Image (cartoon, rainbow, N blue to C red; front, side, top):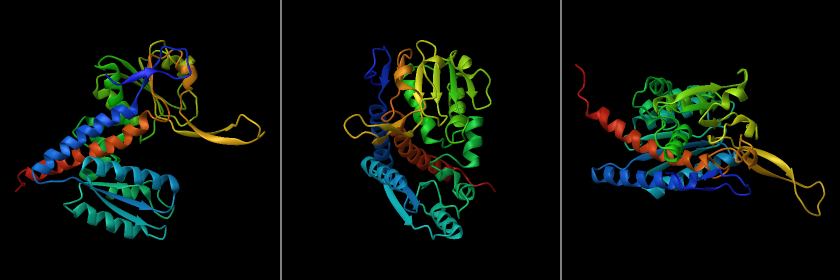
Length: 313
């Protein structure tokens, strides 16, 4: 079971789903897998490509490199300014695809406007696509094949499995239909034998439908949109949203404001009726990086499996 505590600042019974603790368990599993692969003569390698000076992207990349080193994965950094052309980037990806020491390729998004993001994603070898965004991996996920799946939905599924146990037969509602989270989340839940409803901006009576769910995954990108009125008592809530909002600072400086992170779920309200809920931050975020490391190990194993297959003649 996932480590949980009572949600802070509430009088509710909602347990706090500890994403940090779960991520550490995933990373420990990854480190053990890396040791086994190293004993067989292979150390997984992750290539990270960063273009531009976006501060958030630099923080994300730094955290990913740090985690890779912590679990024994080799990292290869490729940093460029925004003058890098699309042709140059595609040439680099081609080299990384052919490099046997590189098992995973991560191109940090967003990319400059001068570069076609979709063309870059589709240029990555599907067996090295640790983001799980390539068409071959997207289609394979829908079909239930053994492919690389997006990190955030994979992390959410692990949180649910540790919190709820067997997910078979549970009704799961996913709010949001993005290609990065909503759609792959729905597919993963289907493979876990849930009954799945996908809600979006055109859904009718969304709150009523959500109140039928045993599990609610919020990935809609609107701060605090989902409150207690969306939940049935005892629901388990996974909040994928990361939104920066401004709020007034209490004290002497009238009018002064600061920003803070909030999710797509109104935590204080939802905690009054939910059985368990993820916080923001500290819930889904740590799981995303943990599953990037897991995907790098999975990619290494998939590549070995393909290499071991006899060539067709």
